Image (cartoon, rainbow, N blue to C red; front, side, top):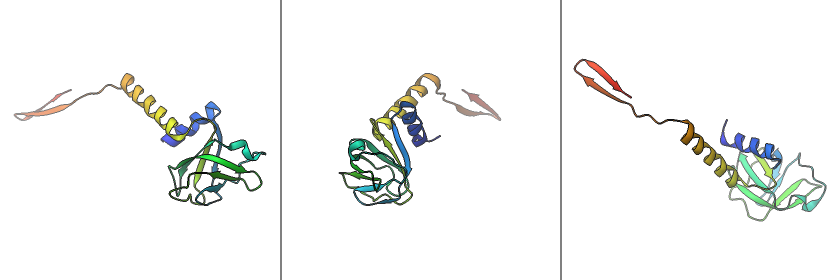
Length: 134
């Protein structure tokens, strides 16, 4: 399981994941998400958009507007790399990508600290016998 799968699972369990969708088309400041259904234009304003695979992956932006008729999400900050058609996108309500990834890294670090023991092993050649100290 990679970090993106963990991110999506946590977001879904927290009720923070709005959609996990595929880009139909995009520009420098907009993305069309075919399965995104919200009746009001301002409903997604302030939500977080994270492109996790495909062209433009690892980009995250805050949604500035949404057009329900075209299912177009607008962002105010221009994408450095325009997301490709068929890129995978997650939209979250409250927490952004860096917040999720930082929490995942902290959890992994704590798990490593409390549950994994570090061992140093050496090997010496003593005459014709090997001695292993662990």
